Length: 77
Image 1 (cartoon, rainbow, N blue to C red):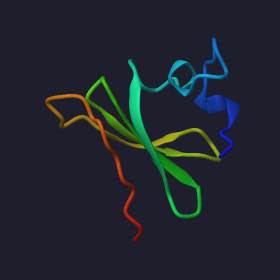
Image 2 (image 1 turned 90 degrees about the vertical axis):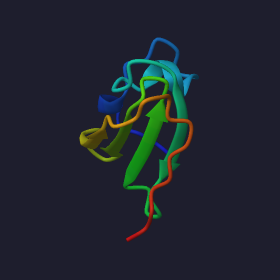
Image 3 (image 1 turned 135 degrees about the vertical axis):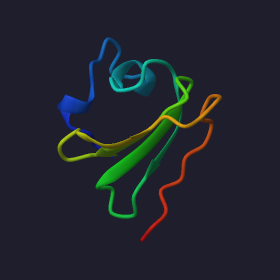
Image 4 (image 1 turned 120 degrees about the vertical axis):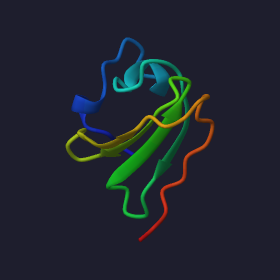
């Protein structure tokens, strides 16, 4: 999957964790929508982000977790 440059701030383009700029710490899981238009990411910062792949803009930020987010799944609706 290719992502727009607006989503990344890369010091090491070979590492997704160092490039995805919206999380404040390590990303633990990523899932893509069935059409690859959106991704969900969860990480050590206890947040989930839903991001539009074409624009790099966050569609939704979820902060209701008390611990790291080790798994994310985008349900198809």
